[in-house]
Amino acid sequence: ITINRPDRLNALTMPMFDHLSDIWVDVDRDPETRVAVITGAGRGFCTGMDVRQPEPTLDEAVALMESERRRITAILNMDKPLISAINGPAVGWGLSMALLADISVAAEDALLRDGHTRVGVVAGDHSSLIWPLLVGMAKTKYYQLTSASMTGAEAERIGLVSLAVPRENVLDRALEVADELAQGSQLAIRWT
Image 1 (cartoon, rainbow, N blue to C red):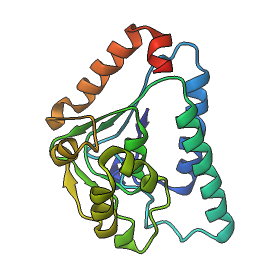
Image 2 (image 1 turned 120 degrees about the vertical axis):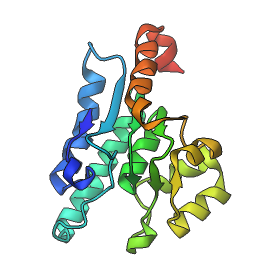
Image 3 (image 1 turned 120 degrees about the horizontal axis):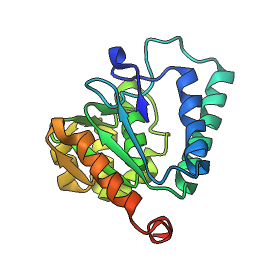
Image 4 (image 1 turned 30 degrees about the horizontal axis):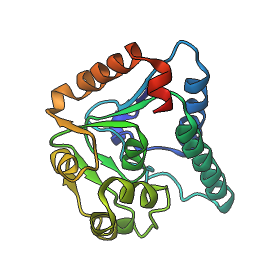
């Protein structure tokens, strides 16, 4: 699955949120799919919501929250493993999406940032739930409250991502892991 808006570092428009919520049900339902890999087109993974689009109305904001609830529930309930190939900047929603994956492969030099507080928004897209599980409370509070950036190499060092590799190898490494999982015992992998 490729988030394909490279001219904006794959920043999401409102309709894209719905598409990215619905796709996980399709992936899980497809009998031919054993593993899913998500990445971004061009030089970035995803920089979250496109701040150039008009401010959402109250109804749109409520719809977005419902879309996010569906997405998170679908990913958490998916029987199939999900791998994120973080090929470049992953910020806000983009980083949260990448971290929900079962396995995350980041470019060593990728910029990773929660970023919510920098733009005056609460980190409410589940990142405050997943970060502590991955890196503990001290690192979570530091990176989320300050919106400090880190590289993929640093993210691997602190346990935020599974692997960090040279940028040119990110997708290949993610696909290697996907192939390994696709060829393994599906019941053992899914139930694990």
